[in-house]
Amino acid sequence: MELTRQQIERQDFVDNAIFDLMNRLIPSDKEMEWDIEAIGEVRDVILAQFERKGFCTEMEFYPYIEE
Image 1 (tube, rainbow, N blue to C red):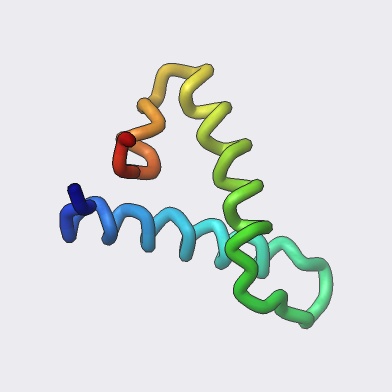
Image 2: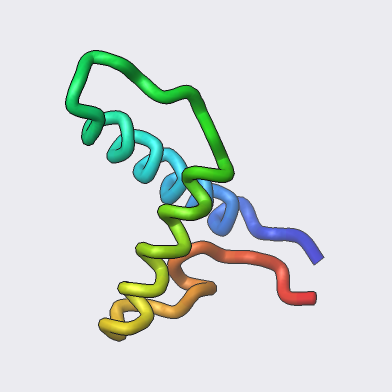
């Protein structure tokens, strides 16, 4: 099974939005390089909050292939 184009676009949207937010929050003119590990950590925290508040499920927030 593979992710659909729409699911991949959702993953890209979430990762890029988090990366953009992280760079915007740096209190200097420095920029961080793409770091999917750091992005993933932030993504997990955001997901936990969204699930706790009942905004969405994990699959809705960041689609994945269930094994």
